[in-house]
Amino acid sequence: MSSRTYAYLSNYAVYSAMAVFTVAFIAYSMEMAFSVKNVEGQKKTDFDFARTENSGRLGSLMTLLAFLLLTGGVAFRALSAHRVPWGNMYEFSITGAWALSGGFLFGIIKYRLRWLGVPVTFVSLLTLGTAVTVLYRPSAPLVPALKSTWLAIHVSAAIISGGVFLLANAVAGTYLILDTIESKGPRPAWAAKIPSLEALDQLSYRLVAFVFPLWTFAVIAGAIWAESAWGRYWGWDPKETWAFITWVAYAAYLHARVTIGWRGRRAAWLCLFAGSTFLFNYVYVNIWGTGRHTYSGL
Image (cartoon, rainbow, N blue to C red; front, side, top):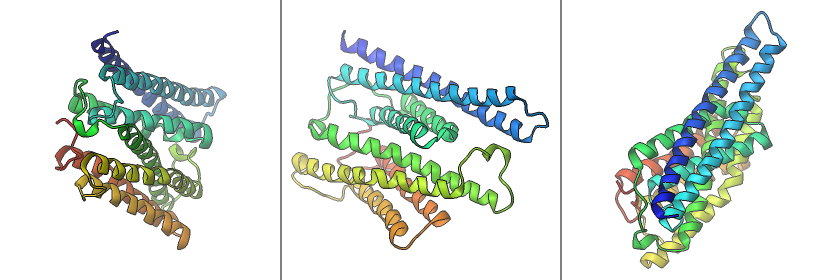
């Protein structure tokens, strides 16, 4: 098939993934709504509980289908461009949504994270919607600085790290919301299925601890690539600087937990702060920043 055909297939796969994510979002929302009815309603029939479970399973199935469609979208984009599909913000965004949904599916199996379905599918839809409406650029050859095997190594590590960081931030944000609610009284019905505050606190820590070495590798790989491309390992380019700030912030989070025993709200806020530095680098520096790392194409 021609490059144009592969490009069309990639676009169709991404649009299809958006449609399926929408179904998943509705299904997860229905699961939450039915859970409220089951807890608060006067008549708690087996049918009500079955409908709740079926809605959640449908959401998970649709998330898996959307993940597979995004896999095709990313792969077809690579075939259309004859390179790895991470040369601009559009490609980074669709791959980031793929990594986020893949990490979430793993979390469903390993940690029973289905209760995060609503925010994860919403963020995935927001990312893909922004990608196709604002960030989209046709397949094109890479700029000279990106023509390196380090593109696949460095950027893939950054994408996977970003997806897991976002999951950890979602868990930390959930912790803060529920902690505020529980300080005023019992949990509302919609939060009945969400794990305890202690479990959320531990899960956020585990996710960050799991992916932090990969982010460290991504920063080091970027420095090695910079030396190959520009003749220097580090130049305090805005993107380099903010990648380092993100590393320091997450290192501080892990250090605070391990050495001085930070738990609960302080740890959750620090996790969210670290995540905000990653998002600032991804959004602001890529679009409005200056420097050698500006490859958004905008």
